[in-house]
Length: 112
Length: 113
Image (tube, rainbow over the protein chains, first blue to last red):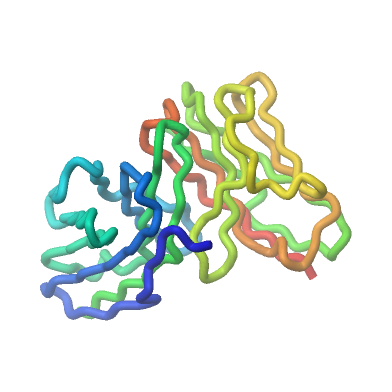
């Protein structure tokens, strides 16, 4: 039972353009969503998050959008840079246990 | 500030053997997590500790996996006996509290032959 899904295994964009990574979830009890970035041979690092009471959160080049009615969130990276090339995971949390449910990940390649 | 440390970084064993992984969380972090990441999938929580008590071990295969966090600091995860499907990266993470950001270690890549 995959509660958090990232249906695109990979994405390739040109440097300077926008990267849009998508994530869908099924559990309406999720109240907090996060994006993590992972380079090879390293652990995931936190990128940006959004509470279910908001529909948008921005941090520099990174913006996360949340559409609760569609149970969908997306991560926008503008402009994309070659250093953004990594695997991106979305994750969701419900309640106060801290337990994260991760999607399968999307590999982003930004071409110079 | 030192990050989450894990050892070993890589381990190759044969099925039915035993293996143990070690994690040293960030100093002062009360919550510690062990995740299993199988190739092509996202991390899956195996067990969560709050200090030295278990908060959630619902997805830990308790017939072969065990974990402990003595004195509420370091933690070890053990697999005995290992199966082929245990081949994965085992990630340790820690956070100040359960609602704070989780910081991940580099992981231990386990290959079971």
